[in-house]
Length: 202
Image 1 (spheres, helix red, strand yellow):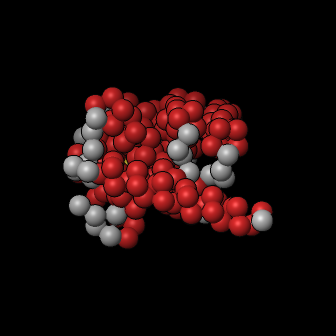
Image 2 (spheres, one colour):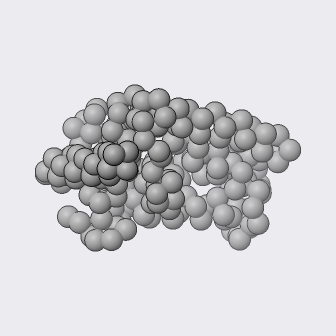
């Protein structure tokens, strides 16, 4: 079940879930987290190329300078591998989504060009991040997870909302008892946070 440390799904999910317990805040993140990931890959398309896949002869000439191994690809690969390690079934699906985002972002970036792409990305990121901060400030009434653990929050966000959707729509859980165990950890963490907050006030 758990792999320990950063690869322990229960620990990661409970950490992120403790900051995203309000249904409206969860919905906001479900709608806005993946667009943040996607538009980040759009901008990463313009990072230095590690290897141009068109040179391999696998893709037709129309793919020139579109599907290139750059920091966008590396980001999608790291995220995808991390999710597969956390949970093979949902993680594999998440990895495919990461790959699809990279492909889609690459084509969008190539068509827009850098001068327009960065403006589109900036507008999308501002909208999505503003929405999430509103979700935390108005509904969750707790600062975002990234303020306490930046790396863990950024890595877990897309997978967290995906698992939430899979659980809500299909009743999916990585293994029997997962959601019950995570719920208990989330409730304990939230109680600890409220106690600390109360002690600071008093």
